Image (cartoon, rainbow, N blue to C red; front, side, top):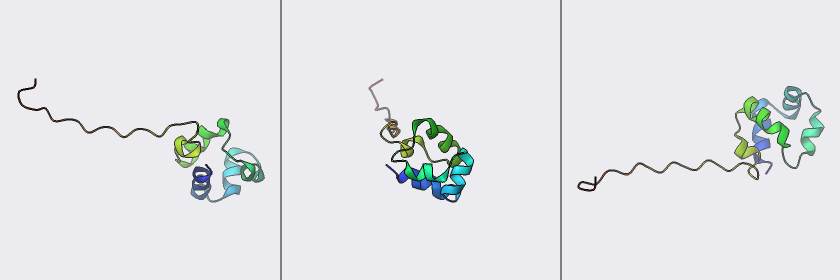
Length: 76
């Protein structure tokens, strides 16, 4: 579950940079087993990493849209 967090950390330039943006200690971030729910949206906005990647246990990945079916002649 830390893959999304690692991606976010890389985007902002490290644990220290993310911690500064959040106004917390970088060691707090390193101790997270999961991104705390109250930080998910903020980190998503700061980094662009979707909430589904930050906490897949809380947010389902969006389903791909089914392709539109072509109308078959005579079935109107």
